[in-house]
Image (tube, rainbow, N blue to C red):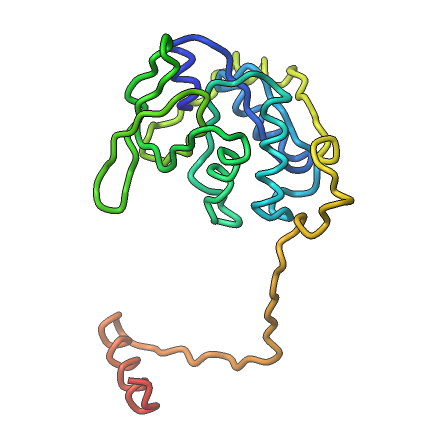
Length: 219
């Protein structure tokens, strides 16, 4: 959404990129229906199977291959890994300035290739200026995304999504250790059915729970 607002104000083209399997094309088409010009899928397994280092390497290789971008936007973090590491890792690999947790784009100086933003911190805000090209991760407070239009939905359904295979960007045979998260899975062998407390209202149930926990020396 923020890239589209910049396009509306300053002009330019917006490319939306994601990494995953064929199902990810649906998300790209939604973005195109909202107004993005071009969609690119880095085709591999589900993106949740890749760790942040590998994902960052792949995306940093894809960006200069696709176009000569001035700004690259990321969300704050993915909802699966929840690390928030990829945006600034990509900035580092591209050797571009990186601005995280951006809540507002103040201005873009097209003549001097600079951008001014406001970052959301734990205890307030910070105003920052950086040179373009630049990588930015945004927080949800930055805007309210628009809805796709009917015309946009029809257009998106016909647009061809550019597909780039993961192994076109990095040598997966050389770097197998970077591919997947190491996941520790716990299993529950046995469990007891919980006791269900009854009562006329929530207050009486709460009192019964306190009595039970006290008797069991939990509290």
